[in-house]
Image (cartoon, rainbow, N blue to C red; front, side, top):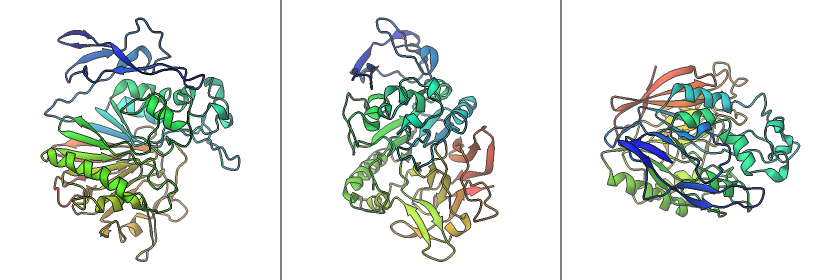
Length: 423
């Protein structure tokens, strides 16, 4: 790899994983921890010398670099999630039409055209559990049978190829989803740690890796791996102590940089209303164990300078706030997989969720026809965008084509009454 920092600098890459049969036929290399690319560097590129690399995505090996400095932050952040094309093993479950009705590539291309400073992926990359059901097999050799699931070829088909323009346009922070689990050797969990994780590995998979903090100038992203949180989505809180320790680490990091902002990124939402009725208590929310874990931290909450929680998992776009010290929850799971139905927002705003129970102050869910419930509550494909605006953050939802849909919402600068004002 080479980059320009005053003069041209060439950095040798270090081998982190080796081929494992036809499933993972690649060697994977990365820049060593002792030779990071410095802020302010330009023109970074992978340079092929002694090793014949696999097809590069983005083509040409050009790598986008941060535009922020140690005293600034990204001004525009795009958020995507749950992007893979869903091909279930059970033939009774419908298969998504990857060739014609899978919106991830158009969304990724729209994000690339918007040229954000940073992209956050909230998890779930690999949905091709049975590639034999795909209608785009012709362009994905090596990803055509059930035995190919989670292989390098399927990682390319589900993520690297459709995201090629995006990967060339902006740095991307990736979060692991429950689809990248550890259920079988050589499966999606192994693919995650081999190709996508912050700490790349060679043939091992962990259910509860520690949180990872990524500094983007004066904005800090802390990724909490919730891929195995309540794996059956049953409401179980059996793992509360495991995740309480994780959120304690989040709070310690936030308290050490109390003058800076923190975003927590975790695939499964800490607070998210999936369904709500008009009567008190008629509410379905996920994932209880994460909320319970936050309540069991030493602080009993997330640190004050945690401004926002970003998640996916539910195939919707929803912004939720409580107008208290609890940070708002932004859920973006609407960027590829089949969409879920969402709640009537006016019902959600009368409900109390979380520990302690707090009333939802604002709920904004992007749905097909929210003015005519209950028939039109299916979600809308798209992504979220956060734009830094003089200490505040403006939030918008963008459709597959990139156009803004719905209101512009501004996150308050207060650390004790965090809420969005929408217009």
